[in-house]
Image 1 (cartoon, rainbow, N blue to C red):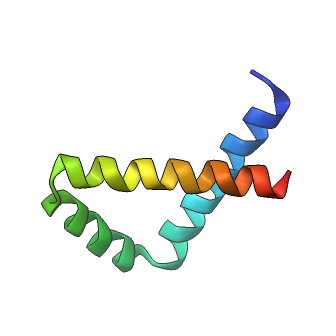
Image 2: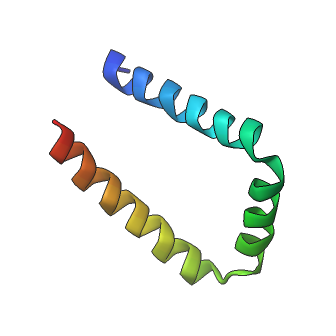
Length: 61
């Protein structure tokens, strides 16, 4: 695994941890809403997040 990828994965953990630390009730509410969504809608949100992330990564670099 490259050092850049390892660093990026570590940053994901930090950001996820910050969300859970700062707003645990908001996170729980979001997860309840996600549990009520269809798998298709979740996949569409996931695909959009991937696309936005890739575009942002290209823009930053």
